[in-house]
Length: 37
Image (cartoon, rainbow, N blue to C red; front, top):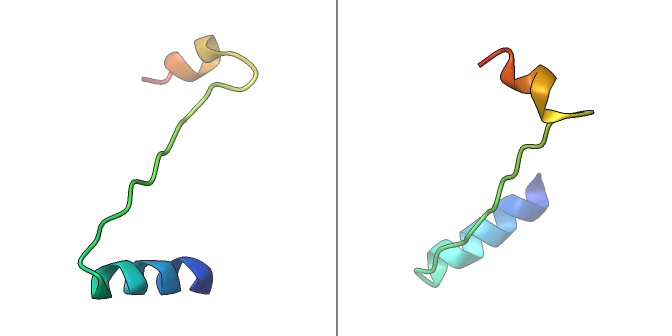
């Protein structure tokens, strides 16, 4: 976690942002996952 804290601190100092993609996938398929939503 410290790795990311350092990265975000550096970006903040430079007044820059970060794009953090987050992808969720069904396991083993999408159908069981979508039944709950």
